[in-house]
Each structure stands twice: as structure tokens, then as C-alpha cells.
Length: 445
Ligand SMILES: Cc1cc2nc3c(=O)[nH]c(=O)nc-3n(C[C@H](O)[C@H](O)[C@H](O)COP(=O)(O)OP(=O)(O)OC[C@H]3O[C@@H](n4cnc5c(N)ncnc54)[C@H](O)[C@@H]3O)c2cc1C
Image 1: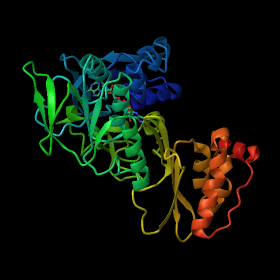
Image 2 (image 1 turned 135 degrees about the vertical axis):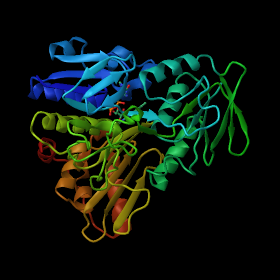
Image 3 (image 1 turned 90 degrees about the vertical axis):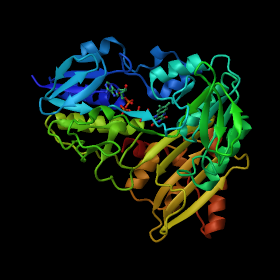
Image 4 (image 1 turned 30 degrees about the vertical axis):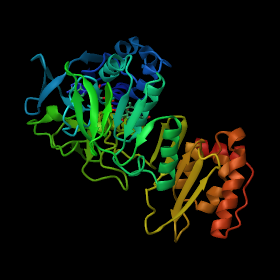
């Protein structure tokens, strides 16, 4: 019987294992150095905030794995010998494989800052990070977060839930402005400050200073200012967790290089999820995709390939969602920080400064290219289908009520959005009434 060995029990590795089991009788082993069972990494913050227990973050009961003949091994893979088709664990034990799947995720970036390995200085990625954060934030009087991205804002929210004052150092002149257009980025700057977070834009970390016990006591910024703190969250991005593949013959760049079938340069070795890097990027998508749902989609495709039905990873239209404290954000298609030469741009913001919508569309065809919405929810299926159907911005605005996920709240925004659009673009778009027939068609497609 074939032995499929999967390194990593995150969403990518586990989806692969579950779908291989649906399609074949192969022996499956899933290895993880982190936890015995798969859990939702995206829910880590809620454990710290007391909204959930670790048990609640496990999507499957512990008996599920045995019942489905998926063997779980808690161990760290130290090296891979692709000639002998075997792995070596940190305790020297070996394991043979017929097919190997690398799904080892990411690790938090550290850029060689002095003091970056002191006690109380860490990223937030693993379950162990959550444990150390728990330990080192007890009773402290200030924390500093370095790096303005989605994990940084999560750490800020976690600390605020325990009334720990936070200073947030962001190198850029506005929050997440390498992803967000100026208006949205500035909305988030304001929102962060309204939550009494000491947001320092244009600020870099220079050094982390130790006390006499090897624990952080302060940081120094690029301008020489010293900020006393007892915890430092390093959230300047993540990168593929693949150091153990050195000398394995598996080609890597930033991540493990793969083709559209998630196959590496070595026969019978595959990689997916956060640790994989596409040799050729898929359209406008990044060569490394570090999001939950793409790991799952890759896992479904790879399982078919492993079971003799070669299947490319074809993710469809980009979407993503996140939360900036209590403002929810969704994005569909492509909204770049600056519109490209062929793109038109529309931005509407509610007077409360917490809700906004941006649309981008092609200048010559009018086709919708991207949407950002903050502070209210839009139906994913609606936009996915409208992109597939290559709908124009005017069609989308006419049917905006069909995308409405939150009828009571959203009711008043649609007309305001369309009125502003008409005024700015000299159009005469009339909002259509919400149609459940059309919504059902969108959802079932
Ligand atoms: C705090 C936080 C919040 C997030 N929120 C969101 C969100 O809201 N939406 C979203 O889309 N994404 C979010 N993400 C990103 C998302 O969680 C990742 O994209 C996703 O978990 C990656 O899944 P993966 O299966 O590729 O890898 P991982 O989940 O990282 O799993 C890899 C596993 O492999 C193990 N491993 C690594 N190397 C070895 C080795 N040598 N031997 C044995 N085991 C090894 C690791 O310990 C880990 O358990 C968040 C991430 C974090 C950290």
C-alpha cells in the first residue's frame, strides 16, 4: 500500500489528508511539531481574549483521525532524503514515504534586530507563541508591536482586551498602505488611534533593550526614542517555514518551488499552502499565498493529483477578508493601492468614517475589476459570479441590493453610494429592488 506522508497539520496538510482518504485507501501519516491535532490558526487570538478555549478551535473531534485511518505523528522533521525517500526526525528516528507533501506553513520574520531573541519578544504564529504571549504579558504596563499588518492589529486587539497599553510602530507613512489605497488606510489609522493605541507611523525599530534577566525592558526607535515595555510583538510579516529542506535537493526560493499541480522539481514530492511558491504566478496573484482558504483549495486539488487525477490549482477570483479591531474588511478581485493606467476608481465613505466602499473598473470596457468594503458585508457569491459573468460597474451598482448581506444596516447606504457615483460619473444608474430569485441564482452557481 502506498504511504503518503504529509509534513504539517495545518489547513493545507489536513485538507490534503481528508480528501486523499475520500479518494483512496492509501496509508496516510500527518506529522506536526506543533500540536497533536489540527486547530484553526485564525482563532488563536480568541483563545487569548477568552472567547474560546483551545478545544473549540479544533474543527474535528479527536476520534475523527483514527476513524478515517489518518495517522498522526507529533515530531519535528529535521531533514528529507529524497533519494532514499525518507525523513529524519529530530530524535534520529526515520520514516519512509512513497509520496511526500510539504505543508509546513510560515514562520514570523525577524530582521536581525538587536535583542530580537530576548524573553518577551516574539511573533504570533504558533500555538507555542500563544503560550509564551500568555506568560509574558501578565501584569505588564506596556507592549510594543513592530510592523503594521493583519497580525499586528490582532495582537493589538488581544492586548487591549486585557487593558494593556500598546504602542504600535509602523515603518510606512500609513497603516498597511502597501495593500490598501490611501483613504482606507487612513480610515484604519484613525480607527486604531480611536482605540487609544499609540500608533507611530514612519517609525522603525532600532533595538530591543534587555533587563538584567534577559527580558525586554524597552525598545529604541530609529529616532533614538526609548519606549519602556515588557513585551514586544514582532509582526513584520511571515515567510515560508522551510529551513529543514536545505540539502534535500528540493528546489526553493523564498518558498518551495512548485508548478500548477503543486509538484516540486523532485518526483513524488509536492508542496502547498503558505510554504509553497509558484514558479509562475497565477495571473495577478502573488507567487506565495499566505491565506487560509487558498491552503484549503490547494489541498483539495493536490489530493486529486495524489490519487491519480492530475488537477491544477485553479483558485478563481481573489478574495480576502480580515478585521481591523471592530471594522470588518472584505476585498474581491483586485484593488491596488493606486489604480492602474487602465482603471477607473470610485470611493464612497459614510460620514461616520467607519464604513466605505471602493470600486475599480476597466476604463474601456466598464467591467468591474475590484471591490473593497469596510464596515459592512457583501455577499461573496454575488461578486464571484459577477466577475465570472464579466459584469460592468453599472450593472453591479444597479444590483447592489442583491449583494446586500445585512439588509437592515446596509439599506441606507446603497442609495447614497449610487447617488455619489451618478454625480461623479454623470451616469443615471437606478437601483433595482432586491431579488431573491437573482440571489438564489448567484448563490447556487
Ligand atoms: C494569528 C494569525 C491570524 C491569521 N488570520 C487569518 C485570517 O483571518 N484569514 C486568513 O485567510 N488567514 C489568516 N492567517 C493565515 C493562515 O492562518 C495561514 O495562511 C494558514 O494557517 C496556513 O496554513 P498551512 O497549512 O499552509 O500552514 P500552517 O497552518 O502553518 O501549518 C503548518 C504546520 O507544519 C508544522 N511544521 C512546520 N515545519 C515542520 C517540521 N519540520 N516538522 C514537523 N512539523 C512542521 C508547523 O508546526 C505547523 O503546525 C492567520 C495567521 C495567523 C498566525
